[in-house]
Length: 70
Image (cartoon, rainbow, N blue to C red):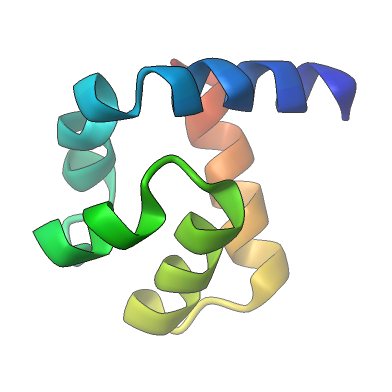
């Protein structure tokens, strides 16, 4: 889990540059969603659950997979 958090810290630090990639992966997220998320993993998870109807575990898994590729 530590590695995932370190990787997420990098995502959070580069959030503005990564918003395009986030929207490419999850096209249902809006610009307003991006402002709310603002690099916060729990906010991204919540928005994925809201927009895609994911269960929390599925949202977390998708985030982990996406983060590991960044």
